[in-house]
Structure formats: C-alpha cells, structure tokens
Amino acid sequence: DAELSLHVASTSTPKSDVGSACQKLAFLYTSERDFCVSSTQHLQGMNLAVIRQLQMLGYIVIELSHCEISSMEIQKDEDLDKLIMEKINAAIGFQMFMIEEGENS
Image (cartoon, rainbow, N blue to C red; front, side, top):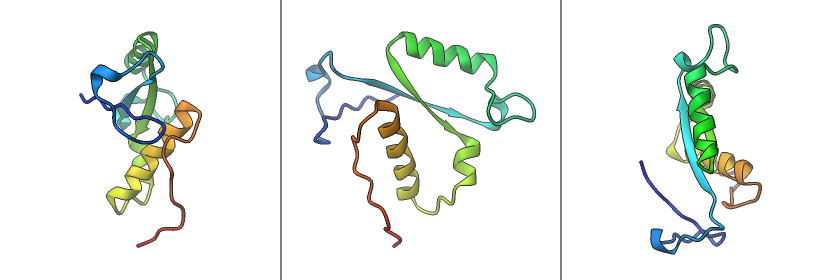
C-alpha cells in the first residue's frame, strides 16, 4: 500500500495537508485468472465486489489488467509509466500529468 497526493501543479502534498477536494485512486491489477473463462472483459464476482467496496469508500478504481500490459510493447519503465499516467488522466477527467508524445529513445 502507498499513499501519494498530487496537486494539479504535480507537486506532492503531505498526508496531513490533504483536503476534502482530493480524489482517492485505487489501482487494481487483474491477472488472467480474475476473468471469466474465455473472456478478457468479464471480471469474476470477487473482483467486482472489491471494486464496489472501493467505490463506496470514495476511491476511483483504475484497473491494470495483465492482458492489457502483456499485449503492449513495454520495453522500458517509461512505457508503463505512460500507460499509468494515461489511465489516471482518463479516470479523474482532466490532464493531471503531461504525457510527451514522440519520444523514442
């Protein structure tokens, strides 16, 4: 478990300074076994229950599936970082992280 708070300016915030305007994110990594047989879209009941409980606690759940990560050409840590930043931006509804396009070094 980890806690990280970021302002729109991408600066970290001590836990004690976190206000009520904060959004809580939970990352859920799902493996092949977490899905129904012959499906990469339908999660099994236990995972759905975990997602519902996290949502009731006020978390925005961001799913990182094994299928999605293994199908990508993740050759560097930066590729995974970019995927995570894109998922965070999509989940919170605005551009928290700037994602640079066209960097192939």
